[in-house]
Image (cartoon, rainbow, N blue to C red; front, top):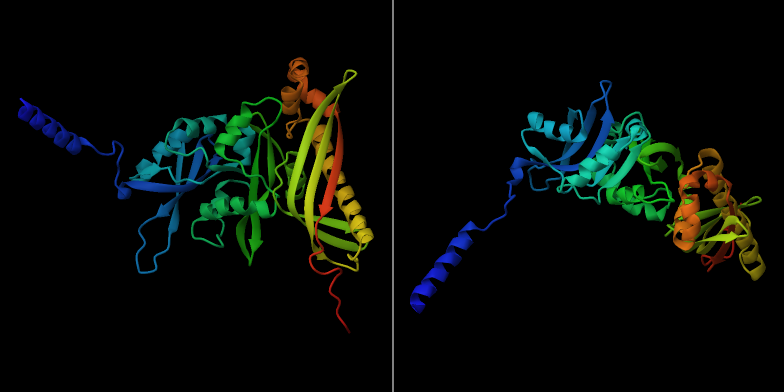
Length: 380
């Protein structure tokens, strides 16, 4: 009896071993691996999907990774993706895609259909970086010259990762944009990408921030305004501050920064306190400014604080007066800190936002002089 039971269990183990495997296993030569994509619309209203595919047919001892572009069309984005099979023979594999670029015209019409397509399909990761092209089409970005790598979208992904050194463009992944769509009291944003000339050839460049009202593009602002926007929303991790004190130009390197936003409701009036505390070090002196005693440091500190305060106030006023869209999350802070008030004003928040007062307070610490106390001088 025991012997028979042992034989039965052994046979079941053997059969189970033969039957195991990956249910969705596919040979690599049966797939086209997508690195990134651009989405446009053509004159007949169809979507045009431009896909950058990794070219695996490279050989040699020092083989490099190359890419090729595939263009496909469809009534929807998903239709365009499926139609790629008819001209490519292989199914597109989105598991390694890093970048999705949307044309400004498509973004103005609304992108919820695109987001829905990518969020329902289990293959694309929701950590794909999403951008708006400020050029005529999104495809133009894919067609531009790459400087550091053969794969265009890999380079764009690296640019976004390194943006913390400049802090002039946000980094937004698909899931983050989807989450912001579902939040009240803040409008979604994403980075803008455009073209610039480098050694006579067109290459891509991060170009600021795109602001959305729900899923539709409303307006864009440039890299410098983006930096001050990031100060407001407490997303500054690095970058520089240029201080213009009379004839002197001084550059401060941002070491760290912390912004605290507090909504206050008093005597029937809502206002906000915005406190920015930034630690910096002296990076460059472009004129004759001395930096050898406390008085010199205090002078530069006062100028830097005044400059940052002015620019932050300007970006807030622009959002209030020109666009009337809360891109900072002021409404979200009211919802969290004063929920009873939020219930009363939520439906009319964009109107309320235009008229609220914001008190901006800036404290900048300059930790060292960059070793030298003044600009290097040259003789005759």
